[in-house]
Length: 187
Image 1 (cartoon, one colour):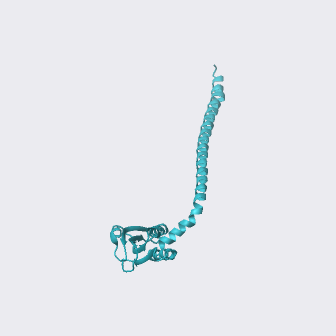
Image 2 (cartoon, rainbow, N blue to C red):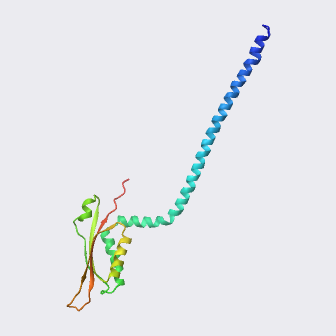
């Protein structure tokens, strides 16, 4: 090679070829980086669309139950004693006095066994009934199903006969419920 052709080859062919190779390498590296970024974003997009679909499905399942939840929430915010009385007052007219009769309804001020262990506002309701087993079971079922915050603390069932009035034997059920009160939401 001559001194004339060597610089031509060096600066005319080799340097542009190296520059083009570096440029091609940079383009390939950039394209692969963009491809990986695109694949990652497409994966995130698919996950997001799946989440949205699941959220819509969950919302469709919960929407019919929302009114029940709101009703339960208002029950929890109300006074348990009044609610307890209202439930029993709506139940008692269904039965004759022989079948079911409320013999007592007291709201004790002490906290009771459960109340001492719980650090929330609560109320206790002590009620007693006399009559048959079926109506008593229905009364207990109504109270426990319509008052989710009521916990049966004590239950005592005894048999009794009134010989003076010539009545047959009947049951006396004394029960004590502890009802916790919902706390106000803090904003």
